[in-house]
Amino acid sequence: MKIIKKVSNSPEETFDIAFELASRINNPCLIGLTGEMGTGKTCFAKGFAEGLGVKELITSPTFLGISESYSGRFPFIHMDFYKKVVLRNLIEHFQKNKSIVLIEWVDNFEAVFKEKLNLEINVLIQYLKDKEGLILENKREIIIENSL
Ligand SMILES: Nc1ncnc2c1ncn2[C@@H]1O[C@H](COP(=O)(O)OP(=O)(O)O)[C@@H](O)[C@H]1O
Ligand SMILES: [Mg+2]
Image (cartoon, rainbow, N blue to C red):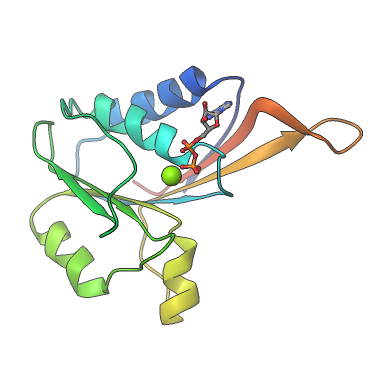
């Protein structure tokens, strides 16, 4: 497993880090994103999708928590488990279809079903704080665990 730690200083940098990761991916895979509200998971998803060549606009998935895009190098399935966690069967359905499945709030899967998903790439995004413990508005630490 390869672990990469990066500091992002802006939404654009987070986008670029994700874009670069996606541009090197040649296989369908399952990617989990974990991090508090507002850390930049959706921003990461946008950069990642663009790195796959997806042409559709990527936004937060709708109330169903799933959006599908088919204009890139792989089908790109973007899920968000903040409000609703989908069944493993549905994730497997997309995997059989050779998709890249990227899941925001993936830690909610384990919380709900008490079992872990087998993620090929696990991304953790965290706020960074100053010496007084105050959140630095535009800085994030991005940790990418990649087992591909
Ligand atoms: N370094 C950074 N990386 C990502 N987003 C950042 C960064 N700095 C500031 N932001 C802002 O934080 C917010 C992240 O929103 P979003 O991607 O929707 O987060 P999440 O999906 O984790 O809730 C955006 O308003 C973005 O402009
Ligand atoms: Mg989000």
